[in-house]
Image (cartoon, rainbow, N blue to C red; front, side, top):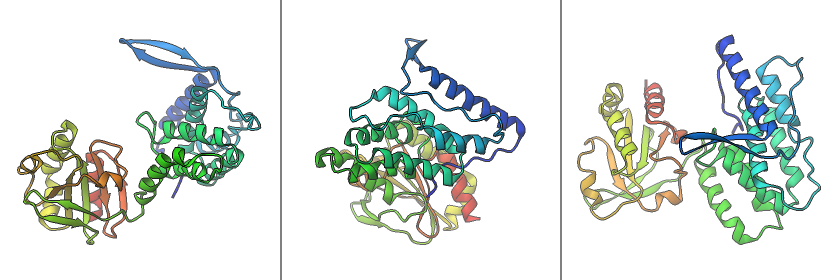
Length: 317
């Protein structure tokens, strides 16, 4: 699994825009300035950088080349010999700047950079935990610019292997690691049981048909909107009628009377509830929407409903 997300740069105008964003992000981060909104106003919070962030040489012209240089040399000025903790806010800031060019860096360079970084903190339990927190903030949490499970897993694995970290502190990271590893794109996700509104029990398993799974709550506004968009999409509905796509809605937090809330869902959808599936699947988004391909593997996860529809429809045609 790649540690970067792929982007197609189609025009020079788009390239220049991306370069500008990258330069601006690096400049602000190097200056230690982060802007936050409070009471409708923007106020600067100054964070002293841990070290001087690198700048790609002018003779490297391509976005891919500059990004590769930045991820390769980003931590060159970091002192990894110190045993005490560093300022977590400053580390979070540095890590966010570090992963920004990961999206355009060569895969080999991105992987090598992450592995080299981990090798420098592997025997330091304090930094291992701090980097895991920074990685969560930048790659996994709600404030992350983009989610990158494969890269985040590297830091979770480091926490698990680090002998100086207690088992209690490892438990949460271990649980996240299990959820992510079993739902990575290209892997076959866990099967699970769920309860139908009529009281019977059903079992989800790959059946060779492209499947959109919406994990959510029928009382959630965004979940209802996702339902409406799928139900009113003509192409999707036609493919469902032909048996080429399945749609499964799972209420992940069922309360008393949940059965009646699913009665108005489309008759050709598979609907039900499970209060344990959240232990198996990575359900960071609400709703959390997965697309399972014909081979039963994760084609996409935690994507907007429109993206899920487009992926499923394209694969079915």
